[in-house]
Structure formats: C-alpha cells, structure tokens
Length: 528
Image (cartoon, rainbow, N blue to C red):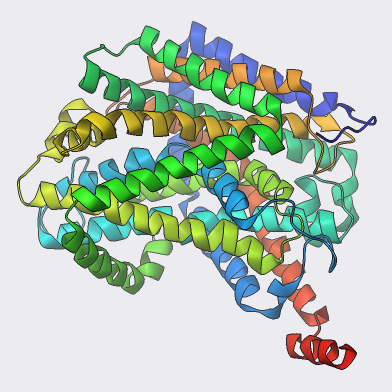
C-alpha cells in the first residue's frame, strides 16, 4: 500500500457530502414516505423532461470512445511511452467488470426479458406484436442487449479514459474535475470548481450505490424466501445488508492490491461457472438462434432506440427501463471512472477501451443471450410462466422461479445467491474506496485513502439501502429504490455532458498531434 505524508481530510467535500447522505438516512428513518415522495417527483421530472439529453449524451459517449478505439489516438499510452501496466490483463478485466456491474446482470438477465415478453407493466404496448409471440421474444432479448452492452460501458469508459489521460499524460491532479480541463481550461484547478464537482459525484454515487444495494438485498431476500422458506422483512434485509457491508468494508480496507483484486477474481470465476453450467443444461440451439436474430433486430433499430425519448416506445419501456438504466450508469460514471483510471496505468487508450468497453459489452451480450434466452424459451413454450410470477410477486421474482426449474437447482440457486452477494460487495468495495479517495486531499492514483473513511461511507450507504428496501417498495417491489437512484443520476448529468464534450475535444486534438503509426514503425526499423 502506497503511503503519502501529504494525505489529509478534504473537509470542504467530506462534510457537505456526508451531511446530505446522513440527512437522507435520518429522513428515511423518520419520514420514509416523504423521502420516497420527493424521489418519485424528481424521478418523473428527470426522466421525462431530460430524456432527450440522456439519449444524446449516451450516443455521444459511444461515438467518442469508438473514435478513440478505431483511430491512431488509441496508441497513446497512459503514463507515457515507457509506462507499463501494474496488473495483468485478466486481473484488470476482472476488477473493471465486477467493480461496475454490481448485481445488475444477475438480477435482470432473466427478469428484464421476461417482463418485456409478457408485457408485464405495459413495456410492449406500443409494439405491433402480441405478448408471448416469437416477435416479442426477439424484441425482448434485443432490447436487453441495447440496455446492457456497448452504450452503458461507453459511459464508464469515457470518464475513466479522460481522468486517466489528463492525470497520467497531462499532469493534472487525480480528480474528476481534471476531466473537464479540455472544456474549462485551468478553471478545473480552482478549489471551488473541484469541490463542487467532487460533492456532486459523491452524492450521486452514494445514492446510486445505496439503491443498487437495496435492489440486490430485495432480490437475495426473495431468493432465500423461495428456496429456504424464510419470510422476507426488515430483519432479514438488515442481516443481508450487514453481511454484504461487512464483506465489502473489510475488502476495501485491505486495499486495491489485496482486497478488491482477490474479491473480483472470485467473483469473475463464479460468473464463468454459472455461464458454463447453464450452457450445459440450457437450450443451446435456441439460445444461438434467438441471440443471432435479436442481434440483427437490435442493430437494425439501434439509432431509433438510442434517440427515442419515449414517444415511440412508450413510458413503460423507455422511461422506466432505458432512461432509468442510463441514469444509473451516469450516476456511477464519475467514481467508476476514477476507479478504472487507478487500475489502468501503463495501458494504451485502445487497451483501456478493450478492457473497459469492448470486453464487458461482449460479456453482457453472452450473459443475456444464455440466461435471458433460456428464460424466454421456457416462457414461450409454456414450460414456465415467469411473467405471471413477476406480476404476482414483483419485478425481481422471476429469477428464482427460473432457477428452480433447472436440473441442478440445488446447486445453482445458492451459487446465484453467492454471486449476488459477492457481486455487490465487489462493486461497493471499489465505490466506497473511491468516495473516500475523493474526500481526501493530497492523494495520488496509487495511494489508499484512510480506512476510517471507507468504514464510515460503507456503513452510511448500507443504512440508506436498508431504509429504502424496507420501507420504499411499490408496484415493481423496488420503486422507491429506483426513484432514489434516478435522483443520483440527475446530479451528474450536466457534469457528464462536459466530460463527453471535453473527451471529444481532447481526443480530436490528440489525433492531430499523434504521429502516424506507420511512421513510428518505420522509425523503429531504422533504429534497429
């Protein structure tokens, strides 16, 4: 662990940010109905009135990272020509993937496609086909591909790329504000600008992380109830929050090179194991056929979906799913960007995007194809009625009915519960450490923030998560959590817009200055 004698508490960030989070926890305990009501109003305002901005920014982020990956700008090495990576490619990918997806892919790989297929909450009411049809199956998997692959990971990647590039190659301090330098110049160094950016980022990720933990706890609780007969309730949720919090706080305190490095390795192998098991016992031929057709459907409708503000797809599909997803990814993006920058020293920009954009997106395609494709097959042919299960028991209930149908349910169900616990612990580990890093002055990318801060943030986020899951339900079982997460995303949207604009400007300038790659190779040959 790196030690820096100049490290000290950044009180101008810590106290305002922690004060708001502590207030949210207190209000949630004293007047949860008021907290959920406020979050609901903000949710409606944000994802309706600003849908156009979310969509435009998501496409812009995708275009910028695509430009970098496929141009000679991708040859730029973070840290300079002589810099070398601190972690292997496999370890870096494991930390990047599991540090960012939390419980999402496990939670929704079955539930989301089935909700679409069954039109459970009116998601395909605006489409020309009927629920349960072949067309609905292809559409449902295609829509899941859209929400969980290249666009969302572009959001993480562009922020991480800009923080890493400005810090390692331009000499800016290790901060989110540094990513704004291509747009606002040296104003990013002004204490007021840096403080405001850091406070907004901490609040967004704390709210987003609390909502993700709450959703994960609700899902794990429903699985325990289904499999082991323990009734869900505040006590069970409190125990689960305590277990997850203990894992990620201990791991976070252990530091980057020990805690999250090992936790992410365990997590990624659980994912690989679940994929292989389901491929062995699942309808492989149907998965291949459906995923191929869905890929074509998605590519054909890519831009119309990417720019639809709900006028075509409708509120249930676009606002409650795609816009909500974008708000979560954007809420996570600043702090996830800091984390990705920490572990990417020595990589070229192309390698950075391969690890943090391309490979995670491909993983999402494969994961949803295998899990979602299997669930859709059994829903369509009448083997299972997962849509009714979700309609009766909530948006996260379909997963457990799906697992109980499998031949190895006795193994897959507890393994999935373990995957959910470790998944969130891994993501929370990276995020709580990064929050603590933001609230610390004089810190460098390789430094570890104070352990007491990691502990305090971890405990506070866990309290909010428990409050929201215990008292903030709704039609889909986790509505209050969704409202809170969308609020976190809105805090970052304008900051994210500046980072995307700055990324475009910085990379275009870098391309003009970058020597031709062919010339570089010829010079190497001449030298040799």
